[in-house]
Image (cartoon, rainbow, N blue to C red; front, side, top):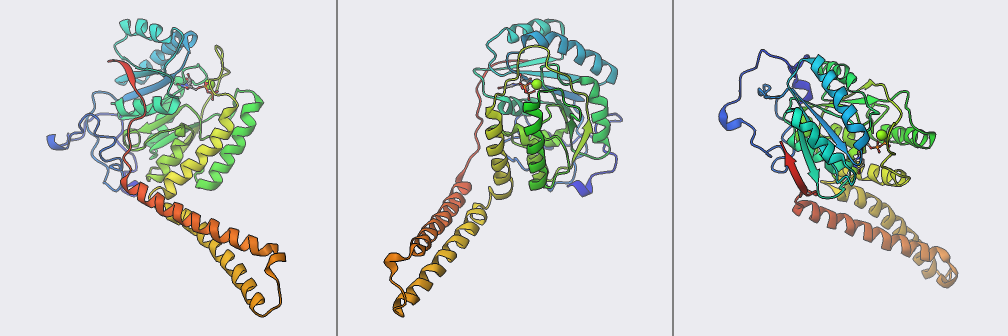
Length: 359
Ligand code: UDP
Ligand code: MG
């Protein structure tokens, strides 16, 4: 798909391209589940005329002090952009007054939509439901804690118009404690190395997407840190744009030290699910074969020595190593085969439960 996209995509503005025939109009929910890869391989559809140009998705968990000011900033930034927009707030099971604040704001602002989870499902689930509901042809995501600045939207949009499908913010000057910035550098480095995606800041909350991306990529578990990796795998073009970052003013970070080991495991997941989900045997089978062959070679060599009467197996620890490698190898291959069977029957289900959806 990327090659066929026009140089300057018509993402935002009239004149409206021809509408699709009625039978091709996207049905609600069609974007997910039924044909998750629909963005791929198809030539870019003429942009369907959406009633909304821009969707802003804001996941939040206990951010009552920030929401009003955030709303003000959003209104003034989007007002300047002169576009039709919607603000989708996802209350990820907050236990403070966040939901009440949102409901109050909604009384005077018809752009606001509120989705409220029954409990705290995490940022990935929140983004995922936002992606599903978003109607705009461009989708922005941002954090609710006032660390991201909506005044960056126009710059991100310009970058999209240069021909990217996903533009990630780059907090070049990051206003966070060093305990966060240092490990984050390390993660970004490893991720860049392993995936070949040339951006500096994978986990910036502030990002811009073309509609196709959010309707194709499936963010689950805690993979929100690696959305660019998932999108890249689907064939979308990933860019970045430097953004201002501000210190957190109210409340505290919602991710504790757990973010590091989870982040690392999630990187493995991201790599596994993008590269190997459809062919787990290639990963497990390869290492299984290496191990089993090494084990076999060792055992065979010792067997020959034994037969020639040159050794007594009971005092050769190498014998145990050989057997171990053989068994581990066979197990790896079996796991790969089981993975193949599972990936063939797997169905993806939603993993959150919505308590209120106020449009
Ligand atoms: N968030 C969320 N669900 C969670 C944790 C966080 O919706 O379980 C939201 C949070 O309210 C904020 C954004 O995700 O709007 C980023 O969280 P935070 O600022 O704590 O992350 P950090 O800036 O420390 O990386
Ligand atoms: Mg933050």
